[in-house]
Length: 304
Image (cartoon, rainbow, N blue to C red; front, side, top):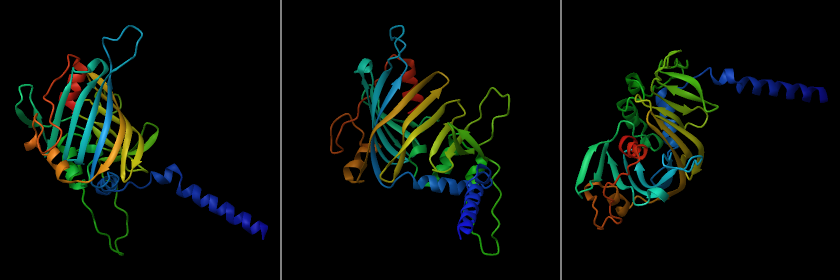
């Protein structure tokens, strides 16, 4: 009897070893649409208010000092297509920067320095929607339009399987497994050729957790998400490292709250109600003011 229990225990261990071995985990790559669908499920339900601190290198810091310059961001996020951010400077940037951006349908609205409401196409390197899309089909087109994923990825669609058709589909040619920041991720996009000095764009989604791990734009800008935390039904990274050819920034999430999508929230994210005067939408918008610091200026014109 004892021998039999030991034998069963050894068999069970062997099965677990086979099932959860890295080789087996890499044997099957789900289709892109399924990866996106699972990721969208991790982006919560409803609206959120997110507060973040953003740190930038300080070129005027005394020799030997690594003290950065910082801004504070207050986000209202309905989904990946509708959001608002209010930005103000802190410390050395106090009264040196303030602005309000409202995003809707791929466009960015703001109040100019002269008090006029402006609208323009959101920057190609605008990355916030990657962490908040709740509709995976819309996001497919968005990622292609931003040059992050290849055009073929937009054609990935659900396929029904019958009992007679049980064979797993082959991995789509634009998806592979890759290690990012010590974890295995689904890499969507073409691999950079060995020896190439130009890194190709792509999207990396963590294999086990289905969260965005890295984004690389064709411009060379990269977003690395770390220290994910669950806020209700929303998985969000507490730390995001942003690098681009002419600068870098470190984002730290300080607060996340789920809020009802009521009339006031909708008004504050309505670009046509954007005004520097306090009205029925609540907090007035801040007219665009950017500092002399070129890294901070680049971030708020090219990545926000």
